[in-house]
Length: 383
Picture 1 (tube, rainbow, N blue to C red):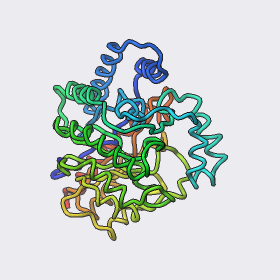
Picture 2 (spheres, rainbow, N blue to C red):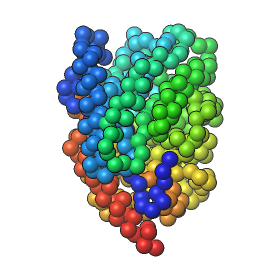
Picture 3 (cartoon, rainbow, N blue to C red):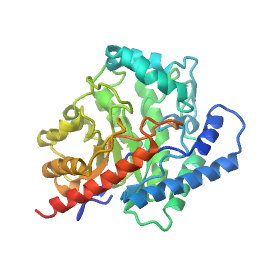
Picture 4 (cartoon, helix red, strand yellow):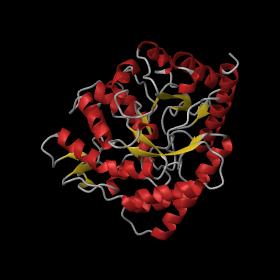
């Protein structure tokens, strides 16, 4: 994993908007309708190439495939693991209402302003899954296609590195098969190890996507945070930490966020994960102050942080000067070589016709990210 040895490197979290013609194919695939598989595979390949080229053109240093072929950053696992099937209860809003104090407190906002408009244009990633049998990995062809598409998209481009995201071995579906939730999670971890190993064996960085870690620390959970980290590390066994980025966040939504777990509480747990770099939210107004947490909870030797210096929760494009200021704050605490400038979260975690942040705005945010990193580099290396 490259570091910011002579300038601040830039990256993002992974998911980007899919082209509309590809979305139509994903819609048919998710709905179980007939679709041209060869045409789908070809369009995913070309969409990856377009996405990677655009990232490189804007100056992003560590790029990825934009998750173009996935219906969502987590629901794609339904196609790669055995033992999962759609649940009878498919009310995503109802499920979230039961689980979140944030949503219970701001029920009117989430029902009327957030979930209702999202449900109206959700085409993928909406299915609730349930585990009804033994979990094993069946996605060998799919992950190899991801790898091949990214390699093809990188041909002839000048970037520093590339990564592929993969979902953490969390509770991807309700458990109706294993005796305990812990047994279920470790079965998922065992299965996902195959996907993780395929990505790193191909020479790419692996990014573990895990919004659940912030929940594992704080609210009532079915498994303690320490045991959950053990499951993640079980899935990462034998994989060099230098090839692993770990991303956690507080969700993909714009919302009040008043019950988010403080970053200072999450850091000790996060540091126990066998990764080299840790990506987290740092740009949205609820968390921008948390650079101070690294003064008290020191970054372990040899580790890197990827703070979000642009956010996925607003269509406002950050000014490059503000981006630079955010980078500099972290660099002054952990050292400039240990900071890679990133984004709070993915910009299209589900395949959607109308993402929360418009694709044209995302590219403008990336331009601000790159320019902010240039400004920060000039100031940090002048000292």
